[in-house]
Amino acid sequence: MAVWKIAEPESFFLERVELKKEITHPHKRLQHLAGRYLLLYLFPDFPAATIAIADTRKPFLPNEAYHFSISHCGDYAAAIVSKTERVGVDIELLTPRVEKIKHKFLHPDELKMLVQTNADPVTILTLLWSAKEAMFKWWGNGDVDFSDVLRIHELPAQLEGIMNASFIKKEIYPLLLHYRLFGNLTLVWTDGSGEIRNKK
Image 1: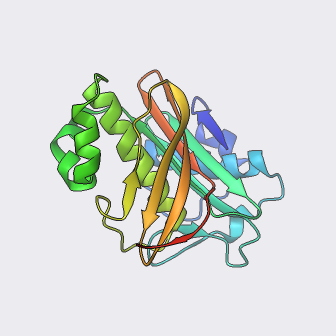
Image 2: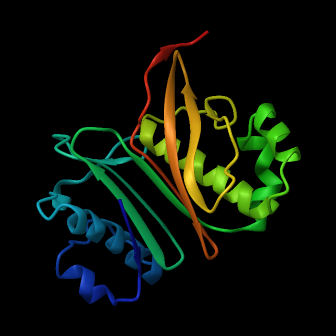
């Protein structure tokens, strides 16, 4: 997993990465290129030119030689790559807007946990949103109710660490979510660690 602060011009990334789709906004184009550049940074033999987009909008490799996930916001891009496990990563800028939608993506049990914490609401809510985005990307198949299917069992107590979570569909998939808070950013990633259990 790696994070890149984008300070380079397009030409820097275009030396190694091909722009595969039409992106007219200059900054979004930079973010797109930086994310794909990171895949090659992590694995120099990563076949970035063969990336396809699923109906769920998830990028993937047709032969699944690597599992990967990309995220970007502001001047940052993040990517995670694995040869063996499904993965998910999300990076977010702290934003007060998340307070208005917390009931849409948090389960009632998670909202109860929030009442018991003294953490800054914007920071903790952005981190929880980022955590659920990383879980959603790990799943990769769409059709997910963020508040019901994606569950976080504990609130973070430090600037970096691990949160226990579950992806609950027909079965329960326990997930370890690695997180880090730095500056005005939240970063969460998962490699699907945990044992599969039947739903009770």
